[in-house]
Length: 81
Image (cartoon, rainbow, N blue to C red; front, side, top):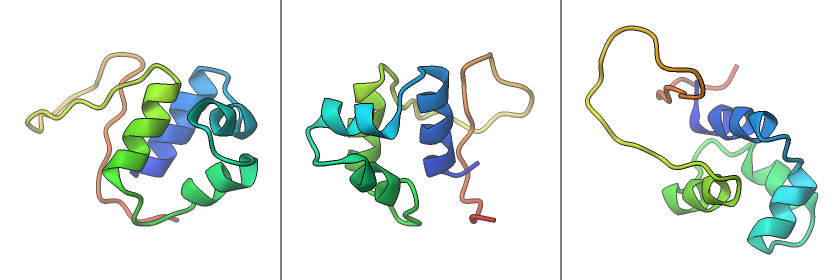
């Protein structure tokens, strides 16, 4: 899963629309969020801003095999399909 897919899934879990996200982070319109979520090279600061707005955080840890707890997402360098 790439980072934008993880943000989308977190938004879905929090029942947050793109319009609500835009309002929370103070950008003008849902289209700004849609554009960010289509980016292949989104900045870490932008991701952190969006995650913070929906009550999520980013954790960096060593890679490990196996399943993650519910609500955790593994982000990789996977290319968009």
